Image: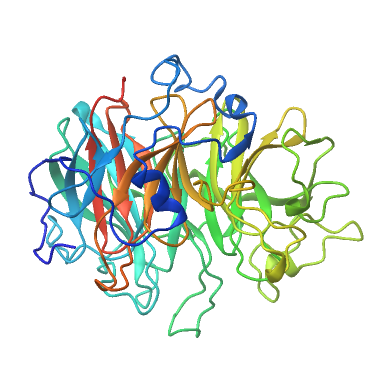
Length: 480
């Protein structure tokens, strides 16, 4: 990678030449071949995932092809994109925040783009910082939960041309802020992916909560843990805009694996601060299915899904996934990650499952669909190289709907790092490739992508490189 620093004022850069970095890996085969729709490494009814969503119109995916052409090499060594696309570096770890509160924190993770006033966009960005973080989120009076916590969120305010107007702390003193999700009232729920209690790792307060961040005025949301929503290793959330029910995923690292939750708020869709009023936390039980990894047939549905009250949401003595849910037990799944709402249903991602780590069956990623009105759960998509290990499609993590009517997926695995597009017909294409080598010339490594999201007008894809923390705005012929 380039040793020269890149500031938030760096000019727009066009992709220009073609050459893949590093040694061969599963991921790199697609890019080296210059492939567009290099084969279906996914099975299942992908059209069902996109049907009825705001982005599922005839744009992009209706011309019998997938993708935007082969990736071309960025001469500045930051981000490879298809021809005709360009990026702008909005923010980079270690640079000064425009607010003067301190440096831009490290470990850029989950992110959302929310509509602001007068055509502005608010980017709310998580920082998955642990106590060993290189650059912690600066502590700010009124926005700091636990002074010993190094994680939190920052907020970038952009104009219509993706110029950074402001960059400041949204919340500080939290820990391991991984993902989260937007609310219908224009805020961000940031999730702590940890269960550490006060006294552990130097923390002065318990962690493992969800916090609300108001990008237009962070002091209005403050640094208040939403304790009724549970204390566990949170990953992502999705809100039903009609009922106000919040769905939550748990990315637990060891058996028993995480649960899929729903939170029934006392004040549904009540605006900033309404979730502080509390509510009821429940966990999903699929009758006869103790482990979702055991299911491998796409289209397989389970009716009569049950929701069981969580005995102790604060996990004062026992982590929730270990608690007693009665003689019928509860349904677990390894690596529950992304979660999003569309067309009256909630989708959630299991990034992978491994029998050697305790799952019932191996898989390379799943997308599940839950229909609240029918109380029905369906396995919609299965990821992975089931027949050809050279195909992409392993370990989906952050995921979002794209202007083409398909998905953008940040993979979380080894080797070269890509944002992959997934067309409505199930074709895979490379949308972006990271070029910042955080290893050595002999053994190169690249920081994973995270937080992929689109601007409210669909004209810009925003995405983070986790390490070195870098936030990109990508524009180009999305309509093609």
